[in-house]
Amino acid sequence: MNAFSKMTLRRSLLPLLISAVVSPVFASPVKDADVPLRVGIMPDADSMPFMLARDEGLFEKEGLAVELVRFSNPQERDAALQAGKIDGAVSDVLAAAFFAAGGFAVKITSLTDGRYGIAASSSSGIVDLAGLEGKKIGLSTNTIIQYTVDAQLEKAGVPPNSYEPVSIPRMPVRMEMLLNGQIDAASLPEPLLAAVVAQGATLLSTTDAIGVDAGIMLFSKKALDARLADIQKFYRAYTAAAEKINADPDAYRTYLVEKASFPASVKDAYRFVRYRIPTLPDVAQIEQAFAWLKARGLLSADLTASDLIDGRGIN
Image (tube, rainbow, N blue to C red; front, side, top):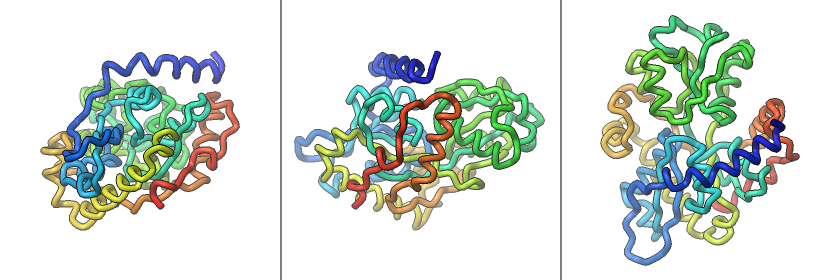
């Protein structure tokens, strides 16, 4: 199957996933009848400021109705965006490239701040990245998760094609299989990474060490053009939430578990990321991601970073 066929098959399957996965998790209360801005989030650190903005009324303060829709894997998130069930999502550059190559117009509107890493099963005996050669690593294939695994291995001098990727899209399942020793290692975002380490897994590496910006915020071009003022309000509320977390991260440890619904084991173990004011990604990093996709035969379209970046929402 060639790269175009893979992308065509991927796009054709996306709408089939919609009905099973799109479920709102709390809408910001509003007094008017405006249609909510619907945004997909993932169970990761990138999404935390959005959740806090919802729960502390920061969207409402901006006069904006926002509905956050939580997904457990990127395929379901991407399906919802393409079907118009959500307006935007916490996502990644690879997903944006697949959308653009397939003719679905999306725009990268900012970076998000998260941390991805690799942890080894406590029963594997693996203590460093070199120990992953020939081993099974749980991840979601052809996504930012696998991209960051390859980047971390390459940085450590380990051939990226030397491990066996095991596709486990749903992160809770990936965590369970790692902790049960059913796979040798797994790649996870924070704070789920901290959760498995707290339960005995061995932390091998994180994206902090290689300077990869793993996450982005994207909106469909249709939503960005039609609701630009709302998206600007959305970012103002995000910034306010990010500043609150940065000012006193430890004050939000209970929030992680009781409100954000992360595993209880992250409460004391998680090392908070520092959230930046909304900013656009570095062009070079986008081009590197494109090169990785092309090297794997997953992207044939000639895309440039300028095709995807749109900073109107944060200006």
